[in-house]
Length: 400
Image (cartoon, rainbow, N blue to C red; front, top):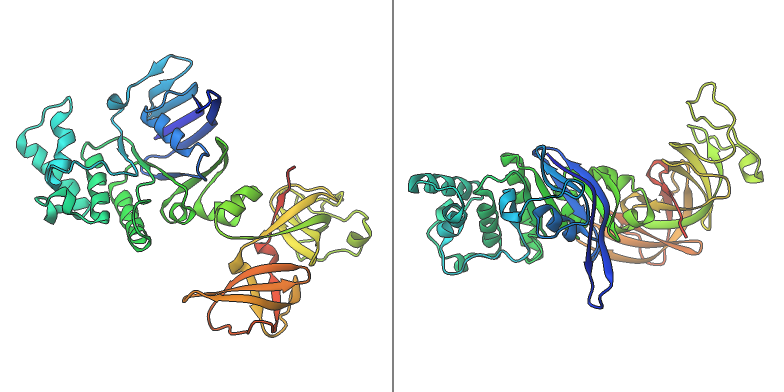
């Protein structure tokens, strides 16, 4: 298990200014799980990884693996990188060009503090080469491997020492799109089979969603949200997370009332009077002031009309909010559907993607992006009905 608590890492920029690359970063990675640090360039994810590896010396915080401290500012502990026993794979695989596949993997065993017998080295090397499906290429020159094979070779070299922790810094970024997708499956298979505790750094949100048990989304050196891939995607905690992790539609508006569980919005919502809420459940609830409870439904007035939405945070009446709706949750149909949040729109543009079609649909003054199955063939300029499922509409606070 990896535990990072209150990690702060700084360095001096080109002009001598102090750059706070990681600020109060805290998270736990359970044994055998893959945890991803996700965020844009400069958000602090690689600095955090390098601090865990010992390649950066933090200013504050603690880092421990399986109960053993490798860094503590309060206790004056800093274990040098080669004593931490971690495996690490960088963007550039740093493969030795003058060695073959077997020799590259055997190298860490031959230069380490512990001395291994020749047969023991062979057994260990062939075991990890089999795991990464390179055992049949053990004698091949490393420079004659494909990009995907080189990536697996770098992984094998990191795994041969049986590290307590595997650190991966954007290991797929140098591969082409199709190979990168294939290697995601390989990495996932390998991590699950070996059950090795792994911290993965990437700016590619699809990579993070595909590989991770849990994800930490970072911005400006701080963690914005930690959760499972599904939690991060379906229930983002902020506009930044919703926007960074996948495509989404943002619809700005103002909270005007609370919906009952069956979305029975009282007429007083429009008049601005208080509505009866249900913070403790539908039965015996106390009157509410018109804001949404910690988890419930509320009515948001927007430029396309009044939206009934799902709320996971508390909101006050007249509070400015942003409603996030994923393109795949913007339903389109040529016949008017039954239910809530239905408007007539018009197809402005569409792009055929093979397995899906992206529609841009104008609804009043707004244009919404919808991703639908290719069987929907409504033409550009034709009318179409738009429906937003209240459970798929995530209402978020607006800051600034």
